[in-house]
Amino acid sequence: MPFSVNGILCTLALLVLWRVEELAEACSCAPVHPQQAFCNADVVIRAKVVGETEVDSGNDIYGNPIKRIQYEVKQIKMFKGPTQDIESVFTAPVSAVCGVTLDANGKKEYLISGKAESGGRMHVTLCDYIMPWDSLTNTQKKGLSQRYQMGCECKIVRCPSLPCEISAPEECLWTDLMIEKQVHGRQANHYACIKRADNSCSWYRGVASPKKEFLDGEEP
Image 1 (tube, rainbow, N blue to C red):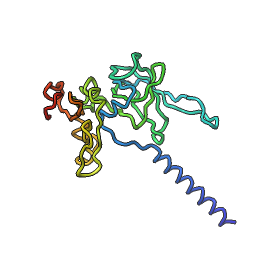
Image 2: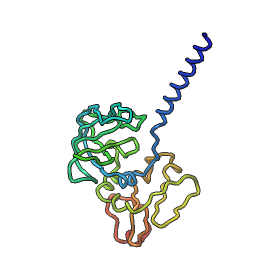
Image 3: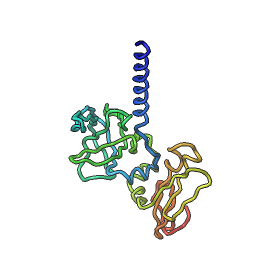
Image 4: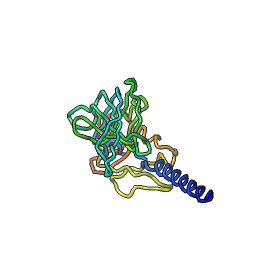
């Protein structure tokens, strides 16, 4: 009998550990350049978070309530999205299912990107581009206003290993992960992939708007 009980306990322990590991690995996001995140998002705003509440959002297939965190936000600027201001940002309650934790004391400003919902609401996950506003470079802030949108028809291709190269003229090769071993490298912080007059795309660096010579095909 003790052997059977121990066996059952061991099995339960293994199941618990497996479940914890499964949850820990449940949220997995591929790294993206900030421009890609901007182009993929329905909504991109600068905002302060002024409140936080756990709310029910319907039921799952078993009738259990689905919980979400509702952040009340004060929108400062909308870079992309509906004409209506965003008032609430929703996310999953834990990071294991891609929930996002934000500081809700109303002091910190964020760049928040995500999917639009009706009624001045949006939903965000850990896979969306969400950063403290003060951590963005001047080039990234300028990109949000105009430059990233100019390159949404371009394709930023991540370099998986060296050597690597583009396969089409509308591509820009992103090498931060390979060369600098980090997502927030030189290209992510200071470059945008811009479409030119001949429909090719190329990296552009700088806060000032691209000159006509660059758009017409001059190398950066």
